[in-house]
Image (cartoon, rainbow, N blue to C red; front, top):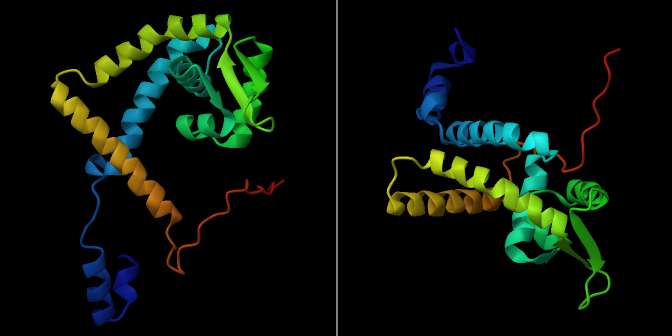
Length: 186
């Protein structure tokens, strides 16, 4: 029995019609995206951990390796790391002499970030492993399929950003972006 068995017949029919699209977990897009991302993340993390590098650190390293330098806000957006987490991460990376943080010449209030020679060397040391995992993930796909997949994933991300900004039905409350305090049961 489920909760629908206790509702009036017409209400049951109406609710079942709304739930006619029952996601099969093994074919459910959010699950498939998470599963693939988690798999590559776990495998890649094992390779970079001995170097003292985490996935968020890798994202910073590779983005700065590609861009040369970047402002804090841009780096947060490009790496999908929220500003407060990124700020703490950058302090750690600066202590390890992987990055340099400077006030921007254009805007003295903005921070400009760049790799040190040590950070550049570390990014270049890790890069072949990153490419190897991308190659493993796209094994058996044509160049056209890979391009299509990447474009579709970018579209999925933009769709989700737009959905996140949209108003929610009253029954679905969006949690605050602030950290929720967890009460101890002890």
